[in-house]
Amino acid sequence: QSVLTQPPSVSGAPGQRVTISCTGSSSNIGAPYDVHWYQQLPGTAPKLLIYGNINRPSGVPARFSGSQSGTSASLAITGLQAEDEADYYCQSYDSSLSGVVFGGGTKLTVL
Amino acid sequence: QVTLKESGPALVKPTQTLTLTCTFSGFSLTTSGMRVSWIRQTPGKALEWLARIDWDDDKFYSTYLKTRLTISKDTSKNQVVLTMTNMDPVDTGTYYCARTEIDYSSEYWGQGTLVTVSS
Image 1: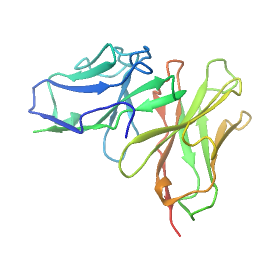
Image 2: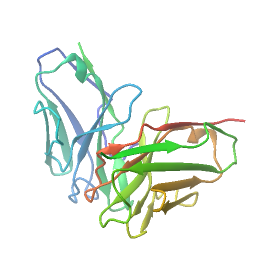
Image 3: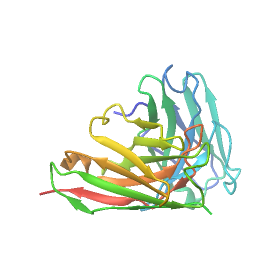
Image 4: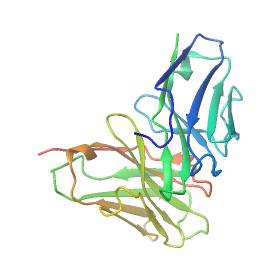
């Protein structure tokens, strides 16, 4: 059972917009500690997609955006492309556990 | 250019101790603000943070695993070592090291090393 809760799967057609939610609590996202998002393609290491709730590392397309409110955060992907099909994870810090916590991951399927 | 690479045994027996080495380049763990973490991913695919060591030798461990983990660094070799005692089949998974920023995000990851625990 992950400390941060994500939907197991989401799907969308090419060109559409999808969102992935990440729900935490007052000891992590709501504290507030920053939320980060990772994309993981099959057989590869996670790739940082969003850091500090809303920021994109260099090279990450603007189609990816993050937001945070209260004890939840969201990752939005617009103009969905086939190459976006991957697993997505949210991450934060939890003061009760004194450590980094991850969501259980969401599998994005591009229809 | 920042790179990290994990190394260690692919197979360990139950109750044995696992020792993993992260060899990195492009930064130094003697530089203020530098941190390296270990994260694993089990076959059920969940990511789990294990431990972190900072430039000033501060060490942090997962609440759930801290009795089994030890993290250390060798700055002369640009290496971070993680040991995990009393390995069990549920510890089977891919182990990653990653450079960790002050906000706990990790932009740079190693490729991961698969560890199987089986007799």
